[in-house]
Image 1 (cartoon, one colour):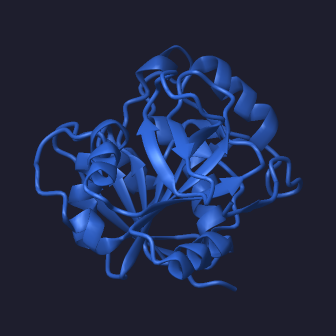
Image 2 (tube, rainbow, N blue to C red):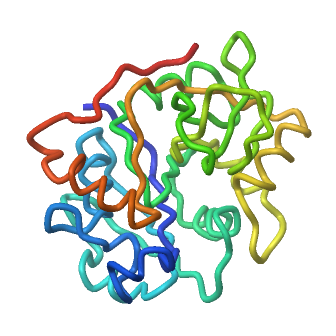
Length: 248
C-alpha cells in the first residue's frame, strides 16, 4: 500500500445551493447512498495509504466532529476550524499548521474523482514540482480551467472562467509542498483557485498537471447532487468512475 502525506480536506462550506434538498445539513455531510459524502473521501484516502487527515471545517463543524470524532475508518482526524469564511486559500493557510509531513494532499470536500492517489504522490515527488494539480477533460463551464504546456506543466489557471482556450479543468485534488502552503502570508478570505495559483505561476513556481481520464463529480448543485446519488451510491462495489491517469 502506498504511503501518502497528510491530507487536508476543504469542507467548510455551507452548501447554500443545496439547502432546498439538505436543509441545514453541512454540505460534506449530505448523504450519498445513506452515508455522508465526506465519508467517501475518507474511504478513498484510507484505501490509498493515508493515515492522517485534517478537516478544514466551518459551517456547523460540530456536526462533522460529532460524526467522525478524532479517529474514523482507521484514520487520525484533526480539525482546523474557520471562525469566519476564509475561502479555499485562507482555509488551506490555516490548516497547513496541522500538517506534519513534507507535503500535503489537498482535496475539495464536495467533489470526488477515483484517482490513484499513490501514483499522484509518486509523480509529484519525481517531478520535484512545487505543486501538482489533478486535471480532467473539460466538461463544465463553471469549473476551473487549466492550460498546459506540451510537457504537462501548468501555464495558466482560471477558476470558473471560460476565458482560457483549453481542454482541461481542475478536479479539485492537489499535492503541495508544505513550504509552498506555508508561504501564504496573507490572512482573511483568499481563493486558492482565483488568487494563489495565478500568483504562484507569475512568481515562477513549478506547477505540474496529473491528467486523469475518468470522471469527476461534485455535489454543489441539486442537479449534480442527484446525479451523484446514481454514480456514487455503490462506489465500494462498482468502480463507476475508474479511469487511467498520469502526467502528460
